[in-house]
Image (cartoon, rainbow over all chains, first blue to last red):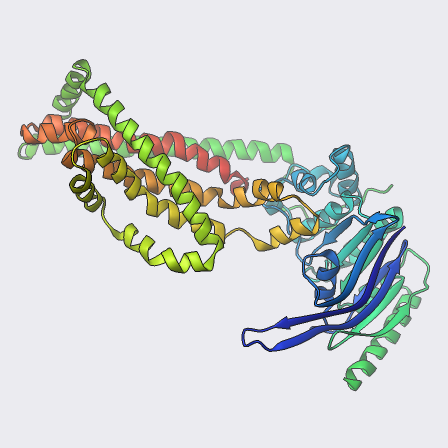
Length: 245
Length: 275
């Protein structure tokens, strides 16, 4: 079983004048098992920094982060805001690039390309695909390494409403099939409510404001009354937080 | 397992149609290039022939080609061309190796960039004739003069283009690779190398042009063999057909190197842009 254990995480940035700014301030968070956790919060609350530290792209100033899968280090897949595909490699070659375990990678790649509905475009270059298709390749790439933990940083924020709605449904379906531990950063409350088992709200200043459990049946649709009600409630709590800030 | 239908329109036609359209486009592009090359060659020959008819002391195409045949028959063409090619290859390879190392350092380190940027710009601005004269004064007549001139003429072009290419490696892609735990070797092979490939071809192209100019001048001033020396031989003999015959060889080398070697290489490394 995979887990993310974050204890007392602090991140400070230093500007050129030597002044320190605290971006994350004492984050304690434990995620384990087949859980889909969303991190939401206003701009500048440190959501992406938190994800980058968890993935190892950025260093932390204090505290600890542990990613485990049983008694070994967890394997991580990452979906970025932009697809970050190698423009000089075809879709299939892009998926091959991130494979550590080369045995059976072609079947895995084809399987996840099929799941995002792009199994027939493996020989295309990224420039030949639309923005939505590129992002779906990014999702397929992350799943194709069969990660224990999947990190996603606002993967649908650059897309139009129709495409992002469709991709959310794709994502939920793939997740229901594969059941990874997911840490999903978003500023979109609808997205968080539709996809998550738990929503962690970050406040300005990089502290956890509150954690909301989402106990709704799956698969969910944004138009489901229960989803809409919870979304309204979360937004109301947001307003309270912003008023207090 | 469900296979979803793509909600967005695919912006390109299906693979079979696409392949056909690509072939058709490529075919059109190749035939257009050939027509352009033939038109350019014919217009040059026409101007040359007109100049020979009406100009003062301009040898005709026939006279020039005749002299070239004589040079080939006497063994001068192959001997001097081979000597020049040896010197050219030696100097160019040295410039590519040293220039790539310095360019990578300048691309990676701001300090090295600051330290060498002005020197590189000065070297870039220096005409090849300056290197040819300097090396002749430094080393006299011998192989070192043309080889060093080739090296010095090509080096700044390699350094500038490689440094630019290294700076252009997309950091987002490197971070993506790191987040997936991709090895450094793979990052070098699949991100850095393709990202710098286009600029590397540009570097080699400029280096070849500048180095070949430098070689001709160095052999002209400081050598007793080679293409440049043989051109000067006919110049000193006041035989314009001989001089022009070697000029044709000089230009033909540049055009062939560009069209036959560098053109296809550039097309290969940047094929993803036009696919």
